[in-house]
Length: 167
Image (cartoon, rainbow, N blue to C red; front, side, top):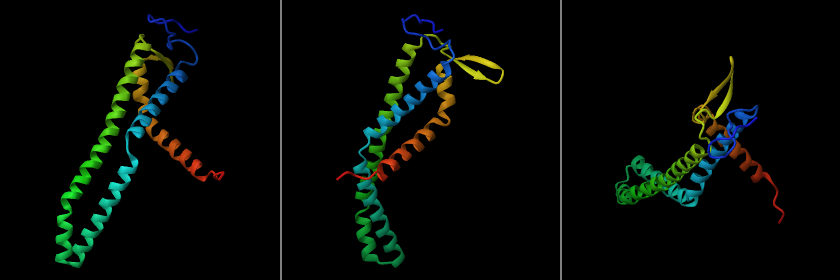
């Protein structure tokens, strides 16, 4: 039976579904963090920058291999632009990281408010059941949650890409 925490919300501390509820919350939180980072990233801009940098690197390699001084000089003049593009790419990635970090902070604050009981979840262990804080369950799941979510999202993208269009 669920008990009621001081803030009036049901506690996950007791009950057969405690670990399942905590796991669902953890994975929903990881998915929200990934989604926030994904939404904050301008993927078109990143692809354009990566393409331009790849083209510049290829021209630079060709100039070095051919030992063409004129071509090498042209590539060297473009080096400042390549550095600027690299900085833009890093800023775009930093936006994604900042959005994910802020989402983590918001989720952890909400969970802290919702589970005022420090031992918020009952987890199965080889010797029986153990009462543990939800934060410990976050840490335990963090070892594989990101990889599982990445695989699930790539699988869903492949399914969507294979789906025939109704045009």
